[in-house]
Amino acid sequence: MSVGEIIRTKGNEVLTTLPEAAVVDVARLMSDRRVGLVVVCSEGGRVLGVISERDIVRAVAINTDNIATLAVEDLYTQDVKTCSPSDDAREIMRQMHEGRFRHMPVVEHGNLKGLVSVGDILEYLKEQSELHSNSEAWEELNFL
Image 1 (cartoon, helix red, strand yellow):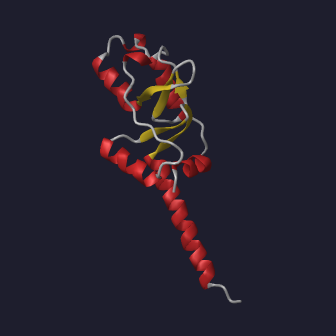
Image 2 (tube, rainbow, N blue to C red):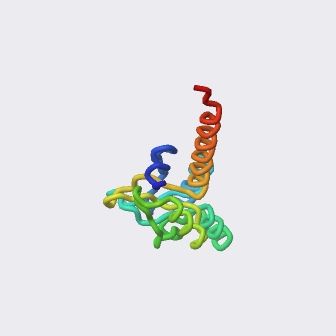
Image 3 (cartoon, one colour):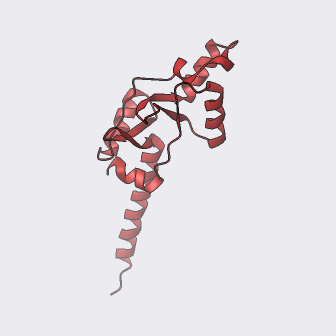
């Protein structure tokens, strides 16, 4: 099972932002869209890093008085692991578990192709398991 299969199933929409965007605007976007992470990209679309709910919570706790003036570039995570569509999803899930992060940008030839989360992988595995179980049940019911 590849990361690309999951992206094709769930879709490749990814919320992105520029580094100079206001943190409060990105937090509002995350809240409105019910997502936990936004990919930070350059004007040309190159992945620079990510900003997560955790980054924003940490910033609020530390910068209570000036949170409204912070830009994404002040606090986003720059050293992010990425994967490619051809990578094995189970291996990517293992890396996320070991690294204690939940999302990974999917990049191919320098272009952002999607975003995969631990939840996406688990959902895909669950669907595949159900499909497999159902096909076995149909085989058992085959009277011809």
